[in-house]
Image (tube, rainbow, N blue to C red):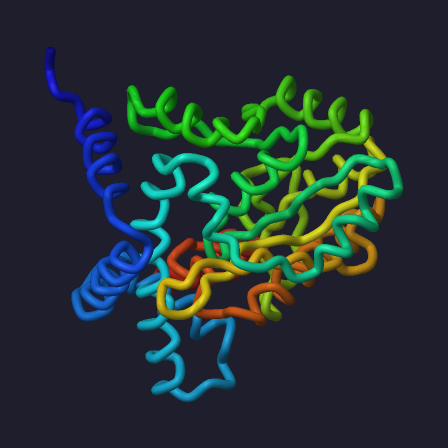
Length: 299
């Protein structure tokens, strides 16, 4: 049987999962430091994003934040094999505390559905695993581009009980149905959408294309939305699950007001742990017509 790229990746993930959290994070930080020292796309995009988001910082401060951010990116890359391969109880034991748990209780007491908005902050895979182990839950997912990898990925992500649904019309209908039943759904809200289903709203003061999916789900289901993420604690000691309220207007019928509230909600979370945000993602690439691409300023 031929060894495919998917098989090689799965083997690498399983080997990495033999590490404990401390060593996974140390090795991940070392990978991040290497990325910071060598020319590469992740470093270029991270530095461009931080310059856009934090123009008030000095060059030295922005460089320090970029270095720390890439270290956290390396950490999450080596944490994911642990979250995917470790037994469920061992994964959940990594969450040492929950901050804002009363907001969860408050939301569930309404009897309405709960829409979890988990930005690419800290370890979002562990965040999803925790909530899927606590509630009947569905989450949107995008199929991987690597042939032969989807079955493995979905098996790992769904072992806590989460139902993974594609981001097509049928998948969205399934999310709405579950939310109307008072169940839980999860979305990564800080991705840059393509084409329809978006509006321009400020993120760190910069107008960017932002998904209207969140407001539409809330309007059609009557669900309550909250922000959540797993913040990485120092020295490999685990994670803190953080829960925060969303900004007012996130379900507004006006897409401009709703996307502004969504971005304000994500930004408030990022400001609590800016180095743990996934700054190597091109979040500012889709700007209003006529505005230059910040990642290709020469064009």
